[in-house]
Image (cartoon, rainbow, N blue to C red; front, side, top):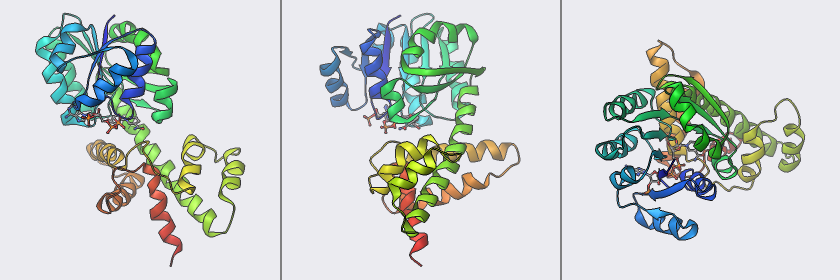
Length: 288
Ligand SMILES: NC(=O)c1ccc[n+]([C@@H]2O[C@H](COP(=O)([O-])OP(=O)(O)OC[C@H]3O[C@@H](n4cnc5c(N)ncnc54)[C@H](OP(=O)(O)O)[C@@H]3O)[C@@H](O)[C@H]2O)c1
């Protein structure tokens, strides 16, 4: 299966690099062409001039772009050029409704669609240790599996189109709570005058240990917030969580609180920093 990759950002680039290394990548396309050319120079794969050309050259199109409108735009550009049976696999985090729209449009054009959002950060993308949440038809999941196994260590099919994105919304609501807990507790540790690295070592080995503490705790304490996962992107995901909860007549307190805190960070010009920049907000609690 010849794969093409669209969107060489923080997540897409290392995922595409893993596909190239496995000998499964035909070509790439990126909106900012210089990124695609740098990738091609490093890996030897081709650069397509647009998503349509990539669709004509490939049997599987994987995309990892920012938000709903970006996914729909790229998929709509590819659709008129899809070959019969081409798999379109969206690794971005978007609304379940967007996945269902993509599924309808791609199927109407003779292709197949999977929503395949991932969790595990840029480290997971680099190391191919991502956890992937899939929505779509079981037969398409089976066809895609050899490609997906190059990217992810855990691949879970949750149901028809949109179910992968719904599961990712659950993941993002949980990630908000974990960020709240870790950033607040580490600001607390600092205010208590404790050695932060030793706190991470001690706490990380007990019941409160978690991925975010291990991977973002040390950089948080060092005041380094290079993405990672941008505040603005998690804010976008939490708006998805808010809307899904509203559809159930519910209001999720952790999601709402984190949306307020991220809005403050975005308004202060920190929207492109890693979500661990919430630590800045928590430190301010101890300046009173
Ligand atoms: N970062 C993480 O830890 C993480 C983890 C799991 C899931 N995700 C999800 O993965 C997706 C990508 O995240 P990221 O961190 O890789 O973002 P990123 O570094 O900002 O990269 C975004 C990519 O999407 C492209 N893009 C954006 N809008 C586009 C459009 N309208 N048309 C074509 N291409 C477009 C960008 O192209 P340019 O180069 O031209 O800007 C870039 O290649 C998001 O949905 C995010 O929520 C991220």
